[in-house]
Image (cartoon, one colour):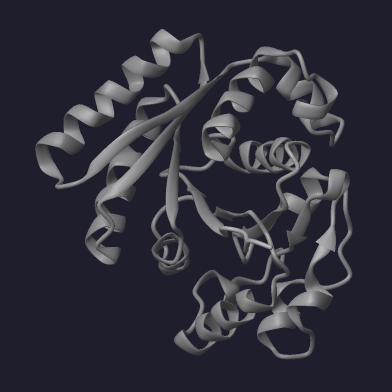
Amino acid sequence: MEARRKRTIAITSGKGGVGKSSIVSNMAYLLSAMRKSTYILDADLALGNIDIMLGMVPKFNIRDLINGSKTMKDVIVEGPFGIKIIPATSGVSEFSNLSMEERNILLSSFQDIPDYDFLLMDTSAGISSNVVYFNAISEDVFVVITPDPASLTDSYATIKVLSKETGRRDFQVVVNMVKDEKEALDMYKKILLVTDRFLNISLDFAGYIPADKNVGIAVKRQKLWAEAFPETHATKALVQICNRLVA
């Protein structure tokens, strides 16, 4: 039997509030629905929220893994629809910057994750040392931006730092909360104009997700919008992003 091609994707952003965790959890649901074994690592280690978004109360989390009291298999919890979650701590400030030893423990524990197709790393916003680290060890980096001018400025700064610190030369942009594809491509072209001029990187357009009232409704109910509203515009757009990943 042919071994799976394990793919690790960091989903990151320059600023908070751009819908990153919402995209990650719904993307995991859709990939699982496509029969792809999908894990989410809540890589916002000090302020994790994936478990809250999915209405879960995990028994253990990444702190138990790093301090050696639990193994990766103990920490992994099965979320809805077969999604596997590696939960973070919440409100534990010492995990906002892992030491080299802690990073090595975490990285070696990834080998204990059972066979998977996708490992989605939901990083915190900004450019902390943890964010740089998780982006460095990922095969792909998706940067989530919105039409907010601050999002554009902060995303450029994040890409610049990640490129400098990790040597990465390829990034992908997901534009969230836009009116339509035209606005999304306009946003992408704006950031591309600056990265092409000042950075030696390749920036691809991974797709967009339109502003959609059903997303807010689902989030308030602690439901996944891709499951609660399969025909809504946001879900259809995210399906296209997932189809490209699977293809």
